Amino acid sequence: MKKKKLFILALIIFEVNSINAQKIISIEAEGNLESPNPLECISLNEVKNNNNPVDILNGMTKCVQAKEYQKAARLFAIAGVYGKYDTFRVKDKTAHQAILMLQENMFASFDENQIDLIFQSIRKELESNSESLGEICLKIKEVGEPTYHPTYMIQHGISAFIDMKGNGLIEDFDAKESFNLALSNYLKCK
Image (cartoon, rainbow, N blue to C red; front, side, top):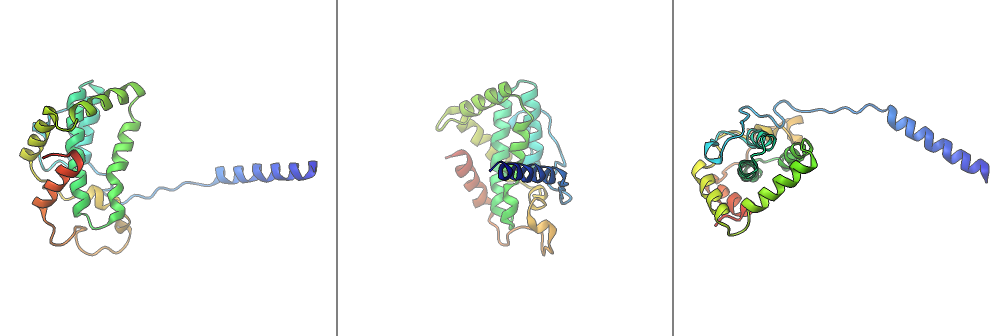
């Protein structure tokens, strides 16, 4: 019985060492999660419709670092709307996780206190039927539909590594309808 336990222990140790010896290789396509115009901590009405969600989340991160949580929550809102809009127009469904990856990376850079404070602000600013949500929805509508090409998302998907034909977007895409849908689905704007 002791020999059997010793043998199992030796196998486990061998397996752990084998796993630790393996090299992890990360391959990314050029443009994956790219921020061509990173923002500073700005107010929502300063965002332009050529800023992609990566640009906007960079600004949000700077707002959290500056302890400007209301601005951060509002930038989070428009980044989410633009990201949702991009999932409607990007053909490769494997690329749609780009927004979640961006948000995960961003929140990983905050400490627990910062996370608590930003979540409090997000809940307050984006509360259903609140005055602040109505204001945020109106401002995002004023900024308008995205005009950037969603390279950050397209290059995040599997299509970036295979022979992709076209520009990565769905043909006959209805921009106006999709923008309104992103506003109502993501933020519950009326």
